Amino acid sequence: MAALGWLTPRRRSATARSVLAGEASAEAARKSSQETATPAEPQFPVIGDVEAAAFFDLDNTVMQGAALFHFGRGLYKRKFFETRDLARFAWQQAWFRLAGVEDPEHMQDARDSALSIVKGHRVAELESIGEEIYDEYMADRIWPGTRALAQAHLDAGQKVWLVTAAPVEIAQVIARRLGLTGALGTVAESVDGVYTGRLVGEPLHGPAKAEAVRALAAAEGLDLSRCAAYSDSHNDIPMLSLVGHPYAINPDAKLRRHAREQDWRLRDYRTGRKAAKVGIPAAAGVGAVAGGTAAAIALSRRRR
Image (cartoon, rainbow, N blue to C red):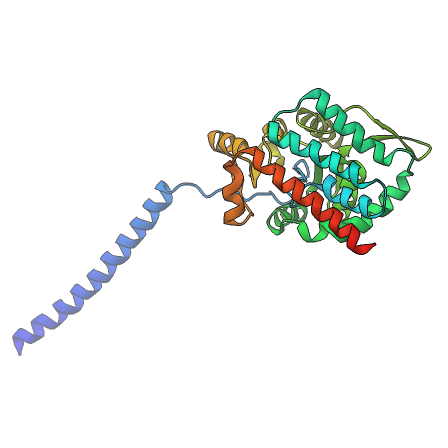
């Protein structure tokens, strides 16, 4: 019994020491992990940072497809132009995708064709029609993922702008419907509220987008190093490079490669099958444009 009495307190003492040792080891491990772990990424967007804003490209970034094409479908339905004009416009878009470069003469021809459609129409008329076309062709084509990114900036108290080569009237409709701050877009000249068929300057494309963002940031008192920009196209690298937080959204092959080289964030909201097509030759786009044109014509004929 004496031996048992001697062993019992020793067993209790060993247990207490084990608990103490375990607690000390756990605390040391916790402190060590805190010292060596990679610091957590700061919250973004930063709530209440009024010197920050977000700039979103429109086509294939916020919305599936091209806003101008969807708008064209709506105008064709309303007999603003004939089938041969739609076919010509589609071929111009197909040529651009096939060539993969912007030939100045060809781009000028494409712009003139688009402007001739609205020449002589009132700005207010196109704005009203734009509201209808948004409901018909665009509302169901907004990427939920990109919409959530924009909402995060709005929830943080920041302004969110669309920046697009599409006509500013279309861009403003879309921005308003999504609850965004506003839109920067290509401006068509008007006199007394009627389109003249000419542009004010050039289309808001490529480097022009960066200049528009720079000018807006100066007017709004924004710090571009704290701003974010989102786009799917390598043509928008100048705009993306302008801000401190660039995002490649549903990126084309060139932008994806550049984003990886620059360690930019990437988001892809397309299905796996669609995303896999990013790397195929641009010539494949001809079929897509032709198919969209045929669909628009067939849709219009069915509704007559």
